[in-house]
Amino acid sequence: AFVQNVAEAYVRQNVDRGSAEAASQLQFVRDQLPTVRKQVEDAQVAMSTYQSRANSVDITMQTKGLLEQEVAVEGSIQQLRLKQAEMDRSFTREHPAYRAMLKQISDLQSRKDGFRREVSQLPDTQQELLRLTRDLQVSNELYTALLNQAQQLDVARAGTVGNVRIVDDAVADTSKPVKPRKALTVLISMLVGVFVSTATVFLLRMLNPGVEDPAEIEELGLPVYAAIPLSVSSNLLKVQKGRRGKERIVGDGRPHLLAAAEPADLAVEALRSLRTSLHFAMIEAKNNIIAISGPRPGVGKTFISANLGAVVAQAGQKVLVIDVDMRKGTLHKVLGVSHTDGLSDVLAGKLESNDAIHPVQGLEMMHYMTRGEIPPNPSELLMHPRFGRLLEELSKQYDLVIVDTPPILAVTDAAIVSSHAGSTLMVTRFGVNQAKEILLAMKRFEQNGIQVKGAIFNAVERRATGYYSYGYYEYASSEK
Image (cartoon, rainbow, N blue to C red):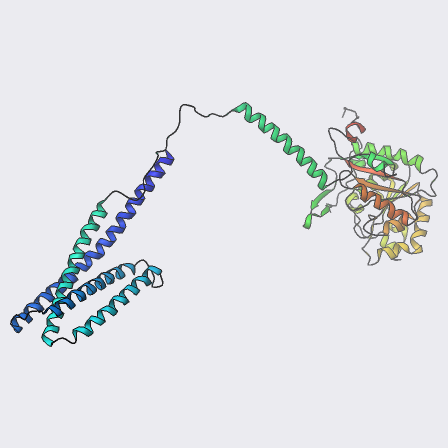
């Protein structure tokens, strides 16, 4: 019905358009009729007056021949003038049709000028008679032509036939109605969904080929000491996306130590397993200092350092956690304290080491040292002998010293600090660090004469298949 209505509306529009054009032309012709009729009357009066005065002078054969030719040319010129007035409403003077019409008028005007030269050679009486007769005949022919044209346009305006017609009417075949095939639609949708989801998984894997199995790390020759499940606790620090997609850790001045707030969390249980592994791994180490680094920022070094120190302190050992990342260290945000009066102030000689060490609230056996004010030369401060002597003194005062270092692939600070440590651990993040990236970080340590003891696989997510699916299970008391 819609298609049929469109077709009929198009036919009606075509007819109405034709009628509108005919009506416009008819109005123009009717406007010209009074003027032409006045010309006819004036020509008749002039002719009668002259014949009365000249006592009925007749036209010679030569004059009659010139008259017929001049009347024909003048009539054509008048017709073209009317057409020109009509075309002025639709075309510019540069239009090809308009220019062709002007060329015809120019040619006819040239012929008319030739006739006038011949007429000028006739006697005066014959010239005057010819002029009056010509004006009368031209006016009569023009008036008659306008009347005929007005009648034709009136008929065209009233007509209901255009140059468009409907060849076939629009019909609907109701013998075989179409209805949705629900079963086929559901089946196709399921297949498309499986295909799209599978393709999405492979695409994400190609775009971010991060390690998701600790076996891939061990194939690089780096033992995995522990896999820390991803915690969803509300006590963790909030991470916000900054400009250009960079992550930014936001501190609110409150402590966010997961091991103290939620000791039954799966991530804390995994850190206890790491504590046990380190107890045996450090037997042959040259000192009790552990340097914790990572290939890149955002892998969770500070989270591991702080919470590992907490579980070690809960086991009755005296532990010190030092934030050596003097550029972007965030240990103070995890503990909910200020970063001032820290390591950089001690190394610069502005503060004594004892004044920069503070106990953790609620954990008497755990102490910390923040990064201090950001210095202009962090690497130079770490290379100064004062840093080595500081670590040596602190090593004697504590059972375990955990040093949170910057990422090894970003700056060289981690290699400098690890040269003083008895053990070096590398934190890798589930689905973030690539195998080549981890291998490059290992080589960077080896170039500085440091052997990485092992890896900590952090933020392992729960998957249908994978390490987390069978690595850790929740095992806690249901009593409050």
